[in-house]
Image (cartoon, rainbow, N blue to C red; front, side, top):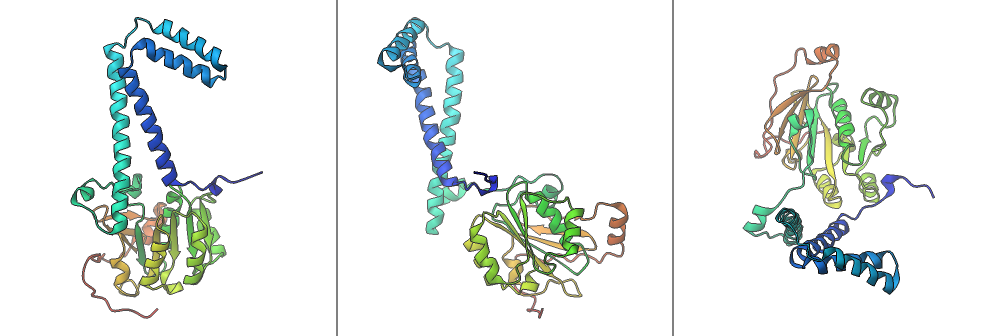
Length: 329
């Protein structure tokens, strides 16, 4: 029966529990190597090999005796003991970390976390590199990015480039609500790297379709282009995030003539990363890195054309009080 790799569903919690059991077993084995005399240790080892080979009682006993004879009078050297102790310490630390993570996850589910748990909490993050690291840092795995700008500034090209990069970390769904499955969408795909097994496209044009479609897939990243076209409200965006807790969300929004994004300031308040696109340059404000810029178009002639006469950048304050009234689409 043929199957695709992306059809395999991995239970990360079960994987973590299996790893914890494995570590506990390995720790017990290492402790035994330190504490059990060499002769007995080799006897146990030989017997285990015999049992694993299916040699029966006699064969198992014979290998146990061989192990005893080989181990007689041979103790662990200081060097060997130090290596075992180093392994033991490393595995014990990993097991303790996994156990602490489970305790902290239990705390987060109650809505209350102790100061110690908050201090020890390890936020899962994506290990971005290159230009994406320079632009946004290492975002948390459930980040929400808002990309906005006036028409023909490079928003879609920026999101296409980002989608190709994000596909290195998991499945990506690009919801091309405005363009649909058009020739222009195909052209952008060809220009930004071609087909990709980890990148899917959808032409969904309403909130309910998106809401119902996402739970049936394991998309780690969803790009909605654009929020204004679909007319998704801030509360509906938050509902999508709540219904898909393992998903990072990138929402694209149109901008008014004066460069402000359309809609309620609440769109920005609920984001971790804000990207304003002006004349082919992405201007970043976010929680994971200082403000920064990145040229979207790499071809010199295109970059020059897009960047000339660029308007001054007016970065918005993600955490400011509401200052912008809702705008009509």
